[in-house]
Length: 277
Image 1: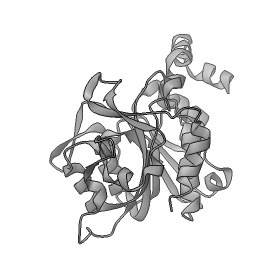
Image 2: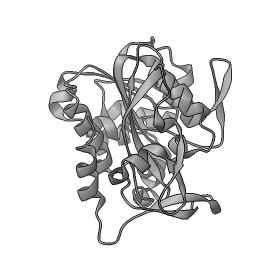
Image 3: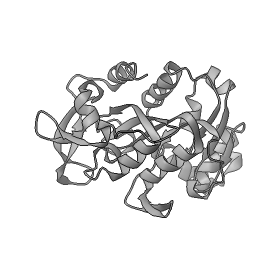
């Protein structure tokens, strides 16, 4: 495969890929495997699978073989170099090298959408409103999956913990929260960042609920810190300790999840996702 990439890329591109690209899109195998565990536990054996921000395709690479054999894979990657690497690694997949917002997938055409979606302080237009990039990916992915389809994304804790509940209400109009896991801020340390992230599992609804679910709200934990009500009701899904402050943004009015002493994500995460059905 190394030779195939050398043939595909120029020397400068290959050096750049080795130096940055392969690490910058890295998601720990234990995190990816946990998502597929939930899908398998839900009865999903195969179908149309979308990864809308695929990097070099680590989610495709970790997919259980039997699931991959019974699925059609579709990926999207905005970066040309990274997308070309993904195409070389997964020639059987349909991969678009463009922004997710520029794709032309039909609504309701996928069974599952998975991935580690981008987040940041920039926005995209969705249905005549401006949404932060991570919020956009959730709404667009829910449009693309079928009724009953699952969206399983790794995202920043902002999706579930932002004080303004309006976006979560939009999500709840379209989907049920099957479950979520809050990861410690060391989960992506190998990629050079300390960020508190969540794995979120949503199942698309046919119609809005009669009553808004509790997970659209923010509550206060036993230490008086704000956190999504789902995690207050399901504290075992928080794989660390919630403390005041946010290393990534240098803010003391926010919270982060720090790892517990003598704890291992490879032990805690499989146990947590086994509770999600």
